[in-house]
Image 1 (spheres, helix red, strand yellow):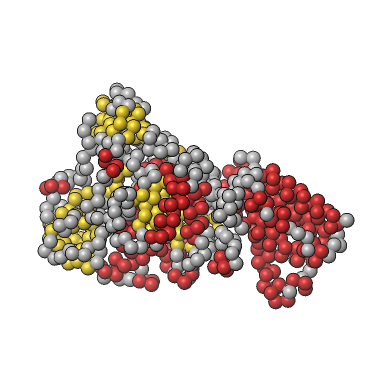
Image 2 (cartoon, rainbow, N blue to C red):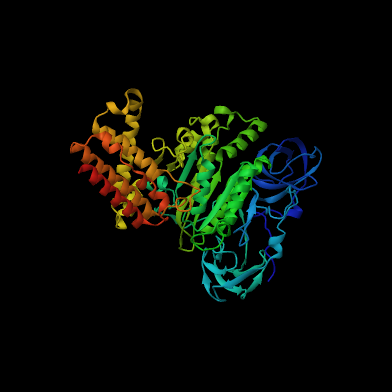
Length: 590
């Protein structure tokens, strides 16, 4: 069999027959060229002698506006531009897992210090992949069904699916052997199916239906899993000012969440931060497979010194990659750090086009653009009948920590969960610095139903009681600062103590601790139960006449250290610490 050829859109001439245009104006990433016929919105354009990649974003009369995805230095009016007759697309295939790519999904490994405009698939083209057929000639297959799989792409078996819009009789299928990524491995209903496939990044991949799910995405971070959980296929925004720990929290989720595939999009972040992420992922042992965590991670690195508009494309590229694995029946998490840098690219380009600015100079369509991005997250029934999901977690970096700025405000409207990072908590060395007063999860009701159906009705009770203890402690905090804790009634002094025990014994978590970096659901529940049981006993003591000061002087250290002294799944060890603490409080009563 031969190789899959890149086709243009319906009723569009091949690339070599596309009319050549002439560049009229270049200003940064904005390039204007003549309209030469046959060009459509969002078509890919090859610009100048070096063939820089660009995308048509406006057509007005005889002028076509293109946003260039690469550095435009050296381009000049009068040079040629060649429309490609197809939208901006990326090649999906077995080469993705464990790879590091730029915003256009070009490989960064082996690309040198600077990614040149003519960089193409080099190492990936030379490698062959072990294809195993799952269908036979003469078999009838519908769109989305698996006709084979690649078993040497990493810990995840990559399925080769019948493309959307295709289906019928399998007239040819390759045998078990090694094939290049662009090789044709089957013919279904007269359509050639390759090992890899091109897909336009701005077009969501089709599914049979969206479905509701009662299953939570376990992140291993107690404050998230207990107070602000996220369902598979849901959306999360993580706003926070500089130094509040956004990157560390997102890295922890990338390392420990129970997704099948992680797509990490470094969108305009500093190069050293991306280097740290890549290094840690490559060194971290995957608790699910025993191999490297990087082997089931796709990293899209578009740092702050890379071309700006490639940053705009990177989030769409990341979601497209996630949908590709979702269609195989996998659960995928997309982590975008940070969507504020993405929005800044939109603002920069809008200012160059002369578009009428909205609040703080952002384009008027910012809200709809953000909504369209998060809309691609979902739990679905795939075309092949499997269940899969894409969960999107996006960091937001409001300038000066201003949560009312446009990107944060619009994002909050469209996401299901908000994990707001608090500067005061971060400066107090409380990590993760997630504000329990400024965060929310709209997935709680459906996940509570899921816990009850799974035989765990205590989850909702623990969550409600922990939230109530934190709210009461916050209510009393200003009063304590004003009049001192000694002036409070005994029960309210215990409420202040309860808030401290919950914060330090349950919510605080060390990313550097072998036992505390990840916390399983059973240990999270055991820690919450232990702290709540100790608080109840303290209240009983003061109700029986024991002075509140006496209770406050008890050493709660063994209970607070349980989160670091016991293993990630050791609920029994936590229960033993609880029982020992209750025994000690019983001695106070006597």
